Length: 137
Image (cartoon, rainbow, N blue to C red):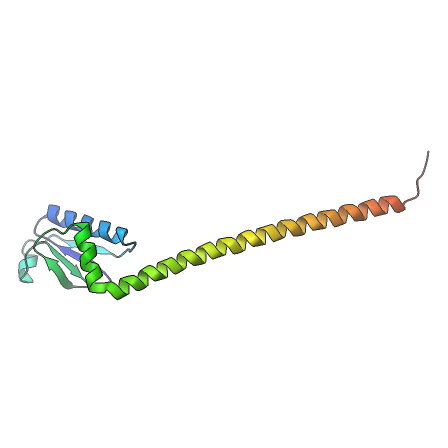
């Protein structure tokens, strides 16, 4: 998915692009946003400036939408896709959390193994020392 902003003036283009980025961030999504400030570009599409397009298709035109309005528009257009993307993101977080637990468990097991080896070595040294004959000078 890629978004395009078409406007007759830079300020409108920048404001709509900023609102779109804010909406995407609030939705925990990231997609490229292209801006085109060509006077008359919206008129060639027979719509009013500014224009919000998605993958080359006009999805809104005529005024600058707020981030909340953009979120509502995108949800209405892509409810199922957005839900799937958010579920995938949540699964990714769960996997990351699970992996942290696995690595922590491995670290604890390594420490236990190292301590066990140290105890065995010290016991073996003590047994060797006890088995040596005592030599007096």
